[in-house]
Length: 206
Image (cartoon, rainbow, N blue to C red; front, side, top):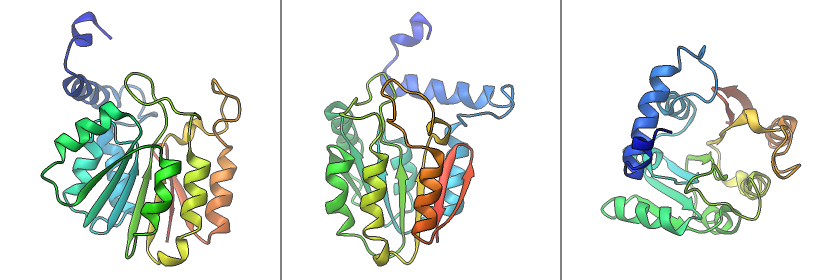
């Protein structure tokens, strides 16, 4: 990051980064990670736009903002107090957005009890450096998927998106923090869900 960019406000820095990522994506051979607009297209194709969305990892709330434009309800879980406060301020006038501050593995069970109708989950609640929260584990994905599986019977229409598929089964600072890719496949198969991978996103659906 250039010295000038380092002093930009956080939201503007993120916007500059997205523009740069979008411009460079073709040059990199359309590799991963894909720009945000590409990931959003995956969510639109497989998710239930007008149903309920549950997001883990709010960050600056840009994905939350897009989802809230159509969804009946958005629950977004953010463990960082700083980022959660920013999100509460950003969405204070959005009646269909609830910002939940805390760890997803702790908050998700209570949210799942409230859900009905078509539900989509965007699971991206892991540490990414910078101002993002570094919790007790690199990713809470095992706990998140276990909790979701316990409530699938109440969700005849469901889509589960897991970001950063490339990281599964790879070496990280904490060995074993990310399960294998086959863990995601087995989870989908054992719960009777179809699955695919697009642009570094694992998608399980029915």
